[in-house]
Amino acid sequence: MKNKLCVGVVGVGHLGALHTKMLVNIDSVKLIGVYDINHERALKIAEEFQIKAYHSLEELLEETDAISIAVSTKAHYEIALKALEAGKHIFIEKPITETIKQAEELISLSKSKNLKIQVGHIERFNPALLAIEHIKLEPLFIESHRLAQFNPRGSDVAVVHDLMIHDIDIILHLVKSPVEQVLANGVAVITNNIDIANARIQFKNGCVANVTASRISKSKMRKMRLFQKDAYISLDFNEGNAEVFRLADSAEIGKSAADVLGFLNLETQSKKIIYEKPKKNEINALKYELELFINAIIDDKTPQITAEDGLRALEVAQIILDKINSQQPFYKI
Image (cartoon, rainbow, N blue to C red):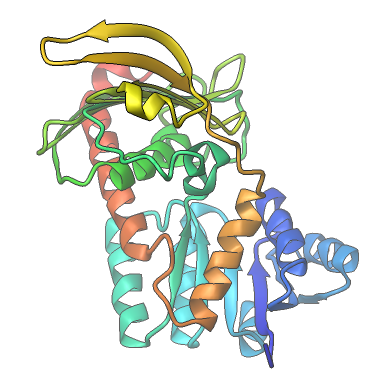
């Protein structure tokens, strides 16, 4: 490659510092520098990685081809808008923006300027999900639990936008059907926003997803279970592991290293119940998604997770939050 892509990072808190660390180690990137409203923090990160700390967003934009946005959700739109107006490609952490209207405006602007937007729904690149890419997925029921210990970082938004949106994005990616109905409830326990929420999402093809997220759990859990005809798949996003239980005929068993758990005698044929644990793909999900973003710019291809994907996840998250807020006289403490 003749020239490296000049990239900057906006926001160098916990997540932005990780973005900086990953971008420094991508061969096709020249990390120009960082900008943060806390200039002392920016100086500290810049010194650690031997790059420049900029005093303004405008200065950073002048010297970059693309930026990675890792600021609070409330600031996503303002920074993304300035970057697009300046003709820069953007990687933006989830959720894409605070409101649906903001996301729609960014999408419209990016299209008019032929600029790339990739949204940081990092769980799409979790080794557990990557391990089942070879399996044809047509889930009819999905159950997910995403529980975390309380962390003030992210508590400025409801748990629906902070944690649940990861699973919403994955589910929308897996279920190739429009959402038909959403039921939801939730409680604000220790903050002024919803801290625990549950949603039942029904799709037009009949699939139902039961999604739970909490940020007041004693222990961390990130699991999803998929049920479809002839198969049950368990995903552990914490461990990055997948387990598959499915029906197979004798001919297939002979070609597989799967464990046989039992037998099922049907009217027309006999099948075996097998267990497989697909090989875990050891990757750094954050670095991988940033590499995909850079490659999409260089090769002029559609990003893996588009702004439209981010908007769709935000739309469903907003429906869930609106359903919960409509019940707040009964739930909020």
